[in-house]
Image (spheres, rainbow, N blue to C red):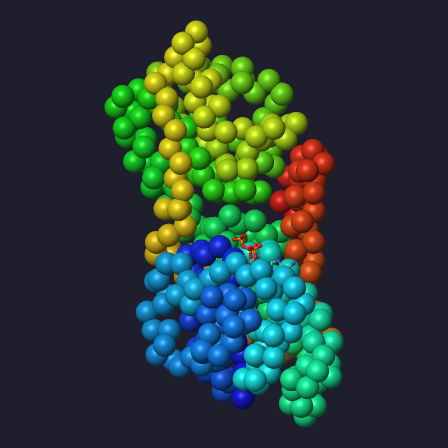
Length: 365
Ligand code: ATP
C-alpha cells in the first residue's frame, strides 16, 4: 500500500486534528500505511520517533479537538537545503513519498519548494552515500498535497480555510460579552482581532456583531478617517445607542500604510473636547485560536482530508501539487502554486497601496 504522511505546520487552527484524523483513516481504508509527522517540519528534519505510524484508533476523538494534537512548530532548518536534504533522507528511511500538509501559505510554499527539489535531493543522497541507488529508485517523485489550516481565512482560491469559522464564532461570543458591559456603562470598546494581512475576521466579526466601525488592511479608511469615524459614532449615539464597538484587525493601517492601533482609536474616542466616551481596549489574543472546532470546520476538515488522500492516489509525476479548496460549497483541487501566487499578489497590492486590486484579489474565485 501507499505510505502517506500527514503533518500540521505554521499557526494552529481549530479543525487541524480533524483533518489529520480524516487523512489517517482514509489512508488506512484505502489499504495504505499512515504516518504522522509531529511538530511540523521540525519533525521531518529530526526524523526517528517524530515520524510515527498511525493506527485507526490513534486518532479516535480527534474530530472535536482544538488546535493540533500532532503539534506544530516554526522550523528554521527547513528553510535551508541542508535541512530539506535531511528531511528527505528521513522520509526515504520509512519509504514515504507522499506528504499531506495542513498549514498556512508559508508552510505550503515550503512544501512546494521541497517537491520541486526532490529529484535533486534524491541524487544528492545517493552521491553522498547516505542512500543506496535502489533505495531511492521508487521514490523519484514526491507527492505533496496542501490543506489550508488558518484562522485568518487568508488564502486566495478558497472560500474558507480550516479553522476560520471557529475563530469567528469565538470572536463573536467574546464581543457579545463585551457588548453587555458596554451597554450597561454606556462605554466604548476598541477590540483588536487577529489577521495580520487579512481582514476577514475583523470584517465578518464586525458585521456579525453590529460594530460601529471596522478597520481591515485591504480596505483602509479615508484619509480623514479620524473625523469620519467620530462623526459616525456621534450619530449612532445621538440615535440613542448606549454602546460603541470598534473592531481593529491586527494589521490595520491607513491609506499611507501607517499603522492604526487600538490605542490610537481609544484616544480619539475618549478626547475630552470630542466624543468624551469612556473607552476601553480589549485585545482578544489567543482565545481566538483555541477551543473546539465548530461543526463547519469539522466538516471542512473531514471532506478536505478525504479529498487530499484521493489526490495523492490519483497523482502522477506530471500533475502539479494540488491544494484542496472549498469553492461555492464544493470541494475542489487547485494548483498549489497558483493559489499561493494569488495570495502573495494581494499582499503586494496592499504594499503598493492599490487597495482596489487587493480587494478584487480577495474576492476572485
Ligand atoms: P501562518 O499563516 O499561521 O503563520 P504559515 O504556514 O504561513 O502559517 P510560516 O511560519 O510562514 O507559517 O511557515 C511555517 C514553516 O514552514 C516555517 O517555519 C518553515 O519551516 C516552513 N517554510 C515557510 N516558508 C518556507 C520556504 N519559503 N521554504 C522552506 N520552508 C518554508
